[in-house]
Length: 115
Image (cartoon, rainbow, N blue to C red; front, side, top):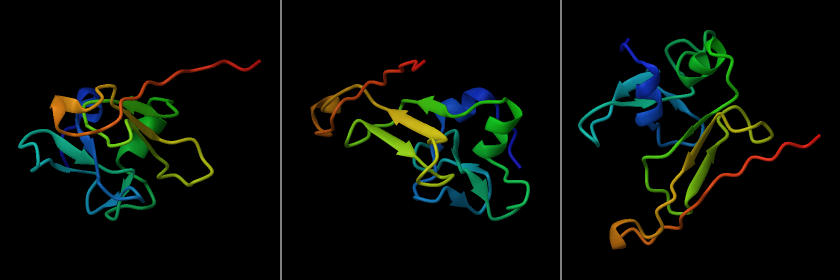
């Protein structure tokens, strides 16, 4: 298992699948040549649910909101814990048409308190 710190969770990339599974909770990010890919939980230990799920639980957090990755629609909500649940991971990318070549939308996130 890798020694993963909070900054690694924020700067690393999530696994590129819709269910958040991977062979291990954290694997080397060969695309960037540094940091990690992380999963919601891994096939290694589905009972303990290691990966970002463990990080959220241990730190009493609902979700991680991150940037650092160009997304075609400007945002992506990773609902790895179920379609009817709050996303455990949200990627926001605010730079529209990044580097004049991605032709992506830009996005922001706004929080509202409903009383």
